[in-house]
Length: 244
Length: 230
Image (cartoon, rainbow over the protein chains, first blue to last red):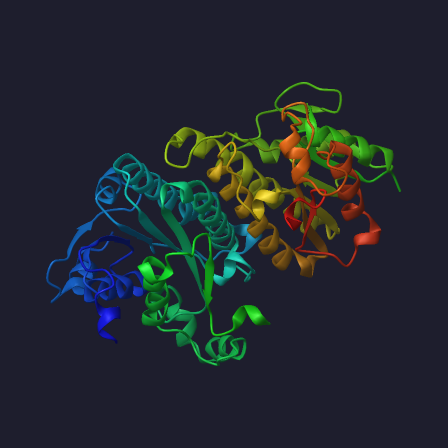
């Protein structure tokens, strides 16, 4: 890492949802490593403690991203990363309504609500800010058994573009990454099955899964001043998945 | 065989009324569903109620004897800055624009699979499944329409093995009596400098439901006079 890259977030406050594991954890750690004071949100207190173990200046709040506490935490931040997300697998015809609603709550409504509070605080203060949403290759394409996830991530893609458009006059940038298959708990069972893992790998031009750190690299770039002219963009970090 | 039957939601006015008119002209029997009364409305009900989808299917089958197509047209647009819009407005749009199509499609598709019958679903998306619209601001609406496009793809992929096609249309600004036709709007539309009509959308829906579109699934056709080209 170059010295400039290491201080991209010096003096900045960042809020990361889903920081107890996976992509959210990698983002929280990298932001902290690059000088940000990081607040991590997640349901798992243990996971958060592990994320922030040995990081000075970071703190975390174990709350549901849908809660009022989470909303209160966002107002002070210069950077908001909406990384919390869930994937519930159900065949379309048997998909339960509660699983559909839970997915929309976590993957769409929580980012929407946090973005609203983030934007409101920045507009009131007249300060710039950056939001990065974690979309998915399923914002552009579909996988069987993922109906709610696909709908929620497609909604998040449009939330990214539409909020970018609305917030641009206020100096607030909104971007997203669209991860492909990334080595996180979300797909651990699928990756552990040799047959499914081989089939997935076959579908990826780079022939391997992403690491959470590779997603964090893209997210931190979009959140940083290096991306100062980028807004409304969604960067696929997918090993070439969407080229096929 | 009796005339094909299409359930169309939101037929009391606007785009839904245009879709109903064009499908009827093409020889389809339309079972129109809307919250408010109207010429093309056979069933009055609040689609956002959780038990509405089952009721719609049951009533359509009882009245028409069969169902061959579903057009998820009913939608709700509540404007508001993304930093100010209230929770209740967002919830209402998510319920009607996303959850209702999810549930109604599920009920109808399950019926088709049980009967071993083919069928077609058309979801009425928007240019806001692709781009934002800031005057007036409506980011949450755009998010629901983006989600509906994602749902279209997911449904198309999973229902294809059952011979069920799922497609979408994406209307641009449509003259429905609700949106004023301004000079700015006219400048924004390459084709004829006019907003679309409900019938412009209805003709494309009729095509997508027809045998001519038999190899099309999971796609969206924008009906926007070239708006997205700019």
